[in-house]
Image (cartoon, rainbow, N blue to C red):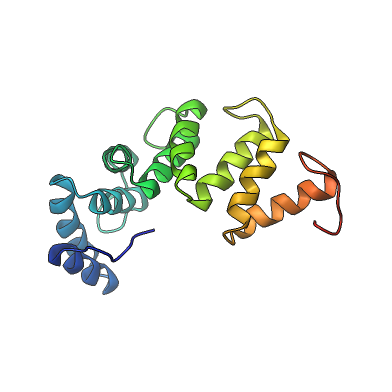
Length: 170
């Protein structure tokens, strides 16, 4: 999710440290940039807190950093923030807030967000159950190569849920 386009020297220093498994150094570099408002650094600091890389795991801190980047329309952070609300990690579980952030991310083409929205439509979780919309969301992610979305879309064709029953397409 992180593009190398437009990296500053400090970001690159953090990336090099991360690539060399010098996680504490990477965290320090990115946290400094994150505090200055750099969205990619905010996202990565959130990911490091979320996964306990270079720091102790702290889902509340992960949510805080994801939110800062998400509010600046950074799609990967919107996806991860939506996922935190979906799972109730660092926040009270809330399908409506999860849906909001996932929708923002999905509209920017993040296949994981498209997939999870499809799942939520399929289950009627945070939305009224809508198999047609689930199939549409799965298709968006499947077209980008996300295997889970391809599998779920295929199953929907087998069952004829939200799409015509077509074994060949399945």
